[in-house]
Length: 354
Image (cartoon, rainbow, N blue to C red; front, top):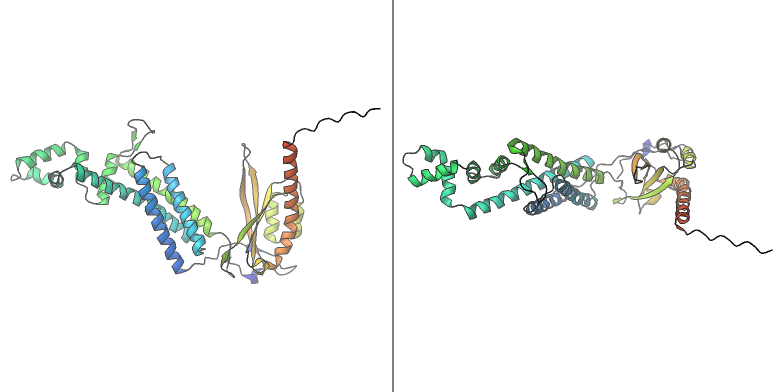
C-alpha cells in the first residue's frame, strides 16, 4: 500500500490536499524468501551462460550490463509477483544477486580450468607442482622429480595453474595471467596485469550489481493498493500545457484550480499521470504526478519526473475531470497535425465558368 496517513490529508475544500508519495515498505517473509531464491537461480543461470559464451567472445561493459539487466528483470518480476514494496531492501537484494551472478561466472571458469588441467597434465606433475620448493631442497627427492620441478619453475604461469586448489587460488592465478582487452578477431591486446585485473573485475561487479539495484528499487517503488492487495495501474495523459515546475507545484499543493489554469496554457511540455487501483477506484487513495517532456537534438522525447503525490480516493473524479479534457484536446490536435502533415496536397479547384 501507499504509506498514506489519511488523517494528514487536508479535507477542507473537497478533501483534495495530497501528501508526498512514498512506498509503504510492505512484504511477507515467504515472499522475501522466494524473491531471494529466484534471484539466486537467475544469477547462477546468467553467470554460467556468460562463462560459456566467453569461451568464444566477451564484450566488456556490454556483457556486465546485460547480466545486470537480466538479474534486474527477474527481480522486478519477483517483486510484482510476491507484492514486495521495500525499495531499498529490494535494491540491495538486486545488488547481491548481481554479485552472485559474477561469482557464478568466475566459478564456472574455475571448474572449466580444473577440467582442462585434469585432461592435459598428469597426477605426478600436479603433485610435484604442489611440492616444488620442498622437492628442490630435498636431497632424497628422485632425479625425475627434481628435473620436473626445475622445468615447472621455468614456466611460472603453468606452475601457478597447477598449484590451484581452491576457487580463490584460481582467481589469483587468473589475475596473474591478466585480463586482456582486445578487439574481436584481433591478436593479443592490452594486458591489465595482476592488480589491474582485480580492479577490472571490481568494476564489472559494480556495473552488474548497480544495474540490478536500480531496476529492482524502481520496481518496488510503484504504487500499491493495500485494500485489495494489488498493484495500481498507471494512466498517462500526455501533451498537456503548462510549465512542468509550476504545474507540479500546484498539484503538490492540491490547488486544483491552479492546476486547471496551468493545463489551459499553450504548449505541450508536460505529462500528467495517475496511478489508480483497477479494483477499488475511488474507494482507495490514488497517486497523481507530473513529468516534463524533454526533447533532445535528435527529436527524441524523454520523461523527467517532477512530482508524485497521493490524493484521497474521493478526489479521483474531480482530478480526472480536470486533466482529461486537456489531454484529450492535446491528443486530438496532435492527430490532426499528423494527418495534415501526411495527407497529399489537395488539387487546386478549377475556376468557375462565367
